Amino acid sequence: MKFTRYQTFVVAVLAFLQFTIVLDFMILSPLGALLLQELHISTAQFGLVVSVYAFSAGISGFLAAGFADRFDRKKLLMFFYSGFILGTVLCGVVRDYHMLLLARMVTGLFGGVIGAINFAIIADLFSYELRGRVMGFVQTAFSASQVMGIPLGLYLSNHWGWHAPFLMIAGAALVVWVVVLLRLKPIDAHLQLSSGRNPVKHIFETVTKTRYLWAFGTTMLLSTGGFMLMPFASTFTVHNLGLSLHQLPIIYMMTGISSMFVGPLIGRLSDRVGKYPTFVVGTLLCAVIVVFYCNLGTTPLWQVVLFNMALFATVVTRLISSQALISGVPAMKERGAFMSVNSSVQQLSGGVATSIAGVIVVQTPSGRLDHYDILGYVVCTAFFLTIALMYKVQAQMGAVVASPLTPPATAGSALGFRGSSGRLL
Image 1 (cartoon, one colour):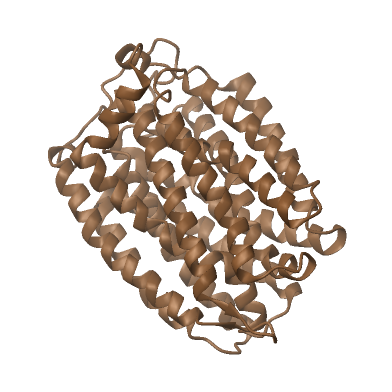
Image 2 (image 1 turned 120 degrees about the vertical axis):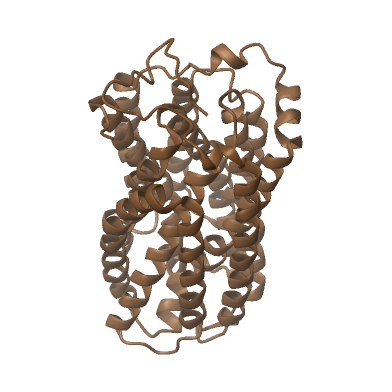
């Protein structure tokens, strides 16, 4: 099954767009040690800087759900991406803690919905059997942010302050916005099924379906790991593992390079052997690594790099397989609403998880983080619960998972053109 030239373009532009969104969120983790020092804030306050994005994204995602299937997905994407760029620029010009909170809130209001729109576009344009492969490529953005974005962001912050990375992200996002405007075709086949529906009724129908509720519950726990561990990862690396701020780019770069190769392979594997088995194996391996990692003391650089490479390989495995599986849950006419609510649940639960992590973890006067091991055990508990919940999600889908759903997205596909139609999920 080969992609058409246009489908290849769609995958590439969505991957680069996702790169800017992921980088905007992930850049706070390596900047954590710097922000704690320069803004004179506590770990709990820094946790709020991270979680306020998630809370505002969660609220906007829920509000957008009623309208998500009433418009061309390209127009929705451009509207929310414009707001994301504005919020990121604000992050690059504010000078104090409270203004940074406000800027992160604006960024979250717009940026939190973009991921949902992206996944709705993927589900519209690609058959279920190919979505693991597509997700594998799009989620290389997660890895690329570590290879190129985070090291460059750290370099800029070390030389021009913590504002510089946000301005860099805003500049890259503006380029993507222009490309989307000029090259991406309208994506509106769903309007034939959902036009004219009452927004409130649309949301109500989406949040009351049993199989959707199981998916939302699974998403709630899926976000726990990243939101709990990652915001404090750089502080843990510097003050607990004994590495310097200047060694952080090496860790992120090596980890990202390995993940860039793992992502596409995992995507193909999940399509071939099954999304759920891939998710289970990735989750179990991730839990083992998290327990070891969170209990480390002073550790040589090469060992930290290896641990991070292994950890992120399993994180990418969970991410790709779970997103590909959950993309098969909603019907096409409700896909935008489902993805928006699902994104809202992810962001809100992630915000709660980050806030809880900020309370569990305590920074001592020496800078060392205490109770990071407890955080690891909490994350692993959530991991095991997601395995059970994800099984239920797959069981609720029944024949949807067990049988071919749509025609393969081959070179003859015309998906994505105005007025196009196809037997999609």
